[in-house]
Image (cartoon, rainbow, N blue to C red; front, top):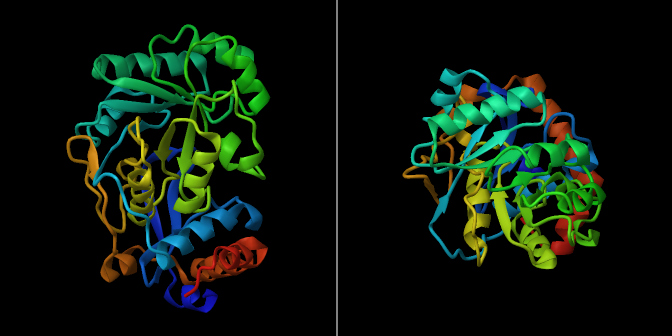
Length: 323
């Protein structure tokens, strides 16, 4: 299987429209299998062991049939980075046509965070707002912000640990979503999320693919929301298949992040706040146009090999997947 993956490997660099958590260009590795294309795109600073689930997800996408779906379109939210200029915010929101839910990055400067939310409310007064903190706040900081921010749908990972989230739940009525606390856990199945998390965030690549993401959701038996990890259209299409395969889907999903990219390998248009579930097969000419240098291609090949040896191979064997 590894030889097959390396034989079809293409690596592209996708410029972003804005600085998104210090990312201005997203490198992703793509490969083709009998079921379609897979995407291996852990962020550059991730270790080989951290990258294992990202590779197993890509392998599942390329080599294993996707489960049947319950829906053919997925409602998505707009995702807004830490922008502070009203014109910039307006321009980016316009790239999410029909989206009535907006996820906003916060957690830096409290005054600027509040001003950003105020601008969004003035531009989209009827939209639901959810915030994403990436675990940056202490319990005191989170409680203070959440109890003065006004009406929001939920707060995603306001504090870093389960213990902090459990303490925070005692001090706010705002719903709490667990993201990093789950996907970065050594064993997501060993976590006790009771009285700490109201909603589980599922990101298909960091959690190791559709099958494992669904198993994690079933284990914790909480409402879920599906989101992306700033993938290309190939990775997003697999996230859409995860969202489609869930029996219950109560929340708009964070799968519209293609709008944050200045270029992409294919198009997944947002129509009336929805994205259709589909297979994505990037055109060869597009892959050529966006291709990285041979030096970067070889770097990714080595990273893929090392990640395979760090645990992806044994996971694939345990699942019984084959080329």
